[in-house]
Length: 396
Ligand SMILES: [Mn+2]
Image 1 (cartoon, rainbow, N blue to C red):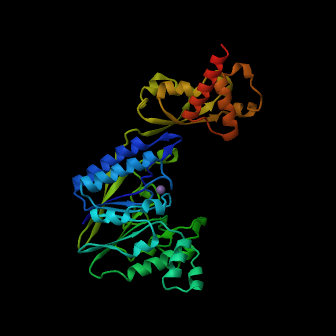
Image 2: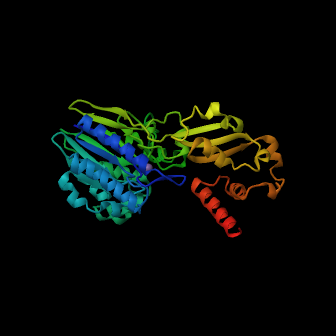
Image 3: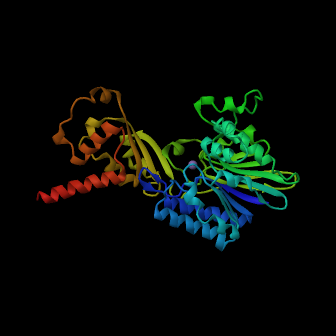
């Protein structure tokens, strides 16, 4: 059996106000092509399919088209679960009849105890849940009320869930799990460190890879980089698209999917890279460098998106410059703009600049920056410009 493992599509997500939908569709087309080339027996989507519990109409339409292409046009089975960003109820809609085309979708804890069975594999699909969901479930499934109330951490809840799954294990089959949680390698080397204590490490409620050792292979969603995979058999695929500037700054940032091959004796995974249509480029340079044609003509300007930090910025020298507009002329879409003021500038920052020397747009921008520490987004900037244009027109 061969599965394509992906997760965290977050359809409908924006990046500082810029829609990522085209980027997500571009990644999707590559995922579908990989699935066809590899002739996989299914596509696993390990949660956070939508970006929000109530997705936009545009996001719903886009995802419907993707699912149709996979499942109806290409007859590739889907194994999908909900993540913490999805609404279990909304995503669950249509679940029962989708099973007829091998579209398997779990959004509720109770659905996780009916594995999908093939001749030699059992696939358990465990959607994201919280300790409250587990208390409710176990309160109705053989646990007395008092015992169920003891389930206060995700670590405890997961141990109950896994031990119930193990009871369902067919002995001659491989056992796969699809789920959506933060799982770390902590505690793996130290058998004395229980999952309970490990889950408190760093104050984060996380699970540890060793809790999943009953499974032959675990396909995870939740953490957006595959480099966070806690072990060789407990793996994150990562998201298909970069979602923020922080991610673009990372050294290990390649996006892709895993092809998981399950044989009688082994389970192996192979990474397949995805290429961005519009990449996110991070620049940290002085103003003069940023404006130097020799520099910006060597950048993927007007093609990719930019997150720019202007180093050693002397604002007093640029009071009449619309900094963002100047950079946009050279680079195109600027997703994020930050300033690193130089020391002298920091000391004089509190001295009021002569308001008559500053363009109205820049005044708003500076005010916004002093309050929020951020620059206006491209949309906000356009809005401000439009407002001033209108005001100007009215006064003519
Ligand atoms: Mn996510």
